[in-house]
Structure formats: structure tokens, C-alpha cells
Image (cartoon, rainbow over all chains, first blue to last red; front, side, top):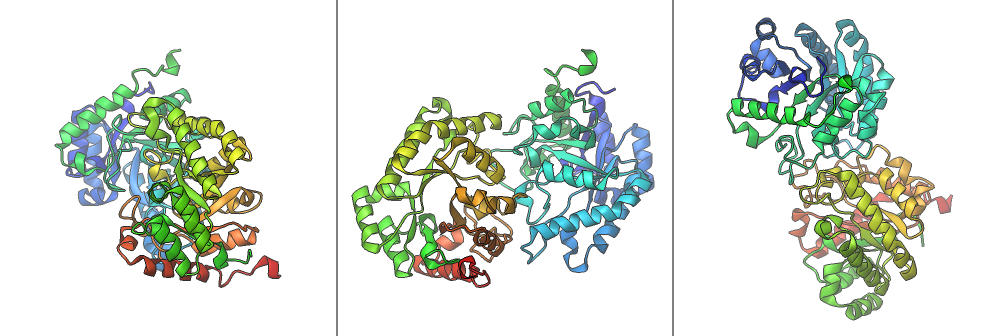
Length: 284
Length: 284
């Protein structure tokens, strides 16, 4: 089951095929032998929880992550309460569809603020306050470090070191979401793809860093087509005994303009090719 | 002389006024009481060393830094030799105009590479090989950590921690160039604006992080107009006993479209305003 780069560990994150509804995505990914679905809350809301559960069950599919909660910058004027309430709703939704984690995107520093340290403290506060609720629902709060170019507007936790320190301070309620786009440059990348840190990883989101990156959000590349050492990252994880999910997540105007079935087929091919030279530790 | 945010410690980096030749910049900055000039090698070559020295002497001006050397990615196909030769020429030029340091921009990982660790090793190799030559000429190799969004194409050293570790490994030939644009988000920023690290800082380049940043290179903001805590950064440096130069460096299509005299006047005003609430340790 946990063979290196096994198709059974592969999920596609819905943002990779935004033209598809949640039901279409569940069915579409399954057509290509992929039963993992990274779900977005707006798509889940449009589908409804009951239909979503039914579609997942019918396809034999599973959910590594539910995107997203925790954008504290959205709530700058109202304190942390709305962020916390939103986070609790996300946890409930994740529990309803059996998602392994809620992706906690942290958020930026807020309009007119110049205090990234205060924003980071606010993120920690919301995570601490949501942690008991997460444990009760069996859902992990997946802290996702964001690329530093997003520090002002989207995510003020910017390195794997920060994310793991925060995760450790929160305890069993928290985990770390590793997204190649955000962390490929991190000087401590391989330290955090090894024990004991691999145990804290909820999901690994795959894509590549396009050169040049023409848009800070919507110009990611397919694995193998950018500057990131995606193969080396996968090999490091497998060597470390990581047995969790891989989730292809490609925000890209280019890829969004292609037929979703073609995109999903290529995602699966590229994912499987990452495993070609990885020796499965369970076979050695 | 080393009063907090004294005008005598202020330089303008030439890239802030690209419409001006080096002679125009030396004279233009001096009109506003600014005698520090961050020099670019293309502008220096156009002016010629003899005329540049003469203009600097006539204006009573000084040079915190000469931009730039070290772009190892440009030399990917030819090994480190051309990068090293170019670095040596930059050191000679810096010595000729009395520049405190050559800004070592490191460079990206090179076309078709996926190995940022190898690129970092190559940067260290060039720095080590250039270090004796730098010491001999009394010029420091100013290692500038670049924003991670530039890791693939421009600079593969991306945190202050990396830059200071590299600097320490090279010894007295090296220093660190702190650029607010590149490091404002760094989780360890304030650790490296304090002793003993302040002693290793060759120059501090000031600007701000525009929200949103619409272009990865040419959309910097004037101090006070972005998400960076420029005042806090200056206060930390002054509290730590930093007595080196400040250099306003604003790559910006917006600011480049304004009359250079207006830009320089505003640079000086904003710089001086950073000092308003800083208590000068030498007066306490």
C-alpha cells in the first residue's frame, strides 16, 4: 500500500482542474485511476456535504486535505474570533468528508500593517485556540509555509523551520503541509524531509517552479518542467519512510486552459515517473 | 559622525536614478546634501575610472558599494573561471574608486539545472577563490542574500543565516549586504541585525516591499510605503551599534518615471524621518 510513488498514494488537488465541480473531479480523477481528491471549500459548498460524501463513497475516493482555513489577514479588523470560527467550520467540514487535514494558510500581515511578527503571533494564537476542536474531530491543522513572496498578502509563515516549530508548539492537533512551490528554495529543505519531521507531514503538494514565474500565484509548472528538484524531494521523503499522500496542486493559467482530462493524465504520468529510480525501502 | 540616521551616512544607489550618468548622479546627489553613491559597473565603465575618481573627489563623495559581481549562473557552461575573473575585475574597479565592497549577487541555479545546492556550493567556491585578491585590494566581498523568488534566476543565497554562514566561512574578505527588499520577511531578521552580526554588514540597502508587488524586480516601494518595517529595521541596527552606511536602492518603473531630483529629495526626507524616534546611543 505504501510503495514508493504508488498510484494509491496520489491525489489531485481540485485547484488543478477548476473547471470541474467536486463531483466531476471525483469521477474525473477516478477515470485515471486516481482516488485521492484535494477538496476546496467553495467547491464542497456548491456540491453539498451529503452529495460529496456519496460521490466520494461511490468512487472509492479519499481526501488528503481540505483547502483552506486560517487566513488571519482577512480578519484584521475583527480580531482573531472570525478566523477561529471559520477554522472551526473548516474542521467540521473536513470531518464530514474524512479529510486528513485542513490546510491552514496562515494569511498575510493585513492591510496597513508593517508588523509581520505580530501576524505570526496571531497565527499561533488561532492555531492554539482551534487545536482542541481539531483533536475532538480527528482532523489535523495542516500548517502550510508559504513562499516569502506571499508573506505580505497570503502567508506569513515562510520556512519549514517556522512551520515545524509552530507545529511542535501546538502538539498533536497540528501537522505541516509541504508544497514544492513554496519550499523548493528553503535552505533547510532536506533537514525537514527527514526524521523526525516526516512524521509531522500531513500531505505533500507537488508542482514545479516555472522559470520565469510570470505571476506570483497562477503560474506554477508541472513536475519536471521547472527549477525545483521534485525527484530529489520525492526520493528524500521515500528514503525517510514517508508513507503519506502526494497531491498534485497546479495553480496555472496555462494548465487551466487545457482539457482537465489531459491535465490529470499528465499529472499521473509525471507522478509515477518520480518513482522510477527510487528504491522502495520495504523491498530492500 | 555616526549619529543615528545622519545624512553623512546616506548614499543613493545609482539604480534609483538610472536616467543619470555616474557624473550626473554624483553631482545630483550632492545637490541634496548626499555624498554617498552606490555605483554600478556599467555606469562606471561609461564614465571611465579617471573621470569617476575626479568627479567623486570634486563632490567630496564616497562609495559604499560597487554593483555587481558573482552571477555564477551566467557562467554555467564555462565553470567558475569566468565568474572568478569577472569578480577580480570588479574588485580592481572597486579599489580604484575606493568602494567599501563589491556587491556579490551570487546568481541563480543556471538554465536547465535543478540543483540549487550545487549552485550554492559554486558560489562558495568563487568567493573562496576570490578572497585573497579581495583582501589584497582592501575591498570586501559583500554577499547579498536575495529574495527566494529570485532563487532560480538571480540569487541562490536566500536568507541572512545562509549569507552570514558563508561570510564566516570565507573570513575577513567577506561581508554581508542587507537589502530590505530581500530580507524583510526573514524569520531571523532581527537576530542578524544584532551583535555579533552587525560587524559583518558592509552596507544596508533601503527600500520597501510594495503590496502588491507587480513585478519581481522593478516594483520596489519608497521607504514607508510598503509592508516592511523599515523603521524597526533601522532602529534595530542603530540599537546594535551599527555605524555603517545606508543606501537607498529602489528598482521601480514608477520611481524611474519621476524626475531624478524629486526622487533623491524624497529619498533623503524618508531616510531622515527614520531617525526621528531613534535614540542615539552615543548621546545616552
